[in-house]
Image 1 (cartoon, helix red, strand yellow):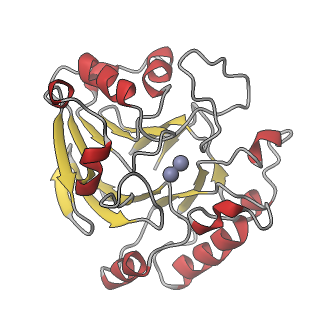
Image 2 (cartoon, rainbow, N blue to C red):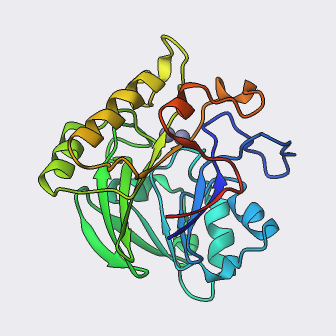
Image 3 (cartoon, rainbow, N blue to C red):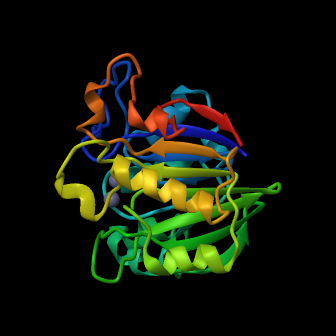
Length: 263
Ligand SMILES: [Zn+2]
Ligand SMILES: [Zn+2]
């Protein structure tokens, strides 16, 4: 799987259509898998993918974690839909559909595919599993999602947003003996002490415990790739010289806009 990170910042990152992005600044969440799959569609995803020379018309499937504005912007989704050669499959939690803000006319431009937690299905050459994230967004029916993507013998976890794991997600991973080749975990709060985001986002101490537990329970081999994504503003807007401190000590690769990784 080829991963292209189109936006790696949390809420508070650059979220205006024409915002100038300086070296080291981050756009909001979006990631491309191979050349036909997207995860999350924040404000600048389409324009940045175009700028990087990606064929935005090749996207067939988009997966949404949740409808917070740093992950979902209707206009971005519609831009991909307009560029696509076919109707895009748009996968989101069944309770998120009402929060998309699409008119009937706009909804008719895409193939909205509501999913349930613990659902596993095939699309775009992948096996996909939706798991509940420890996060809140939109109306009372929406459950933010983590995803497991399996393709070509590789298993990838995408967990932006959601601090810690919900009990049912953790038990699902244990019961199914899932082994990841790569995990993308959000590192929103970083090393900030006592930050209010702790209820729905990860801190570095939480990541340390989580990574250790994943390794001890055979879900994350020592050579698996650990990626820190969805970096908070603050604390990571003031990083100097790529010094990500404890994230690096945890063996995590810190994602940045434009990063390409092969897993
Ligand atoms: Zn977010
Ligand atoms: Zn969120």
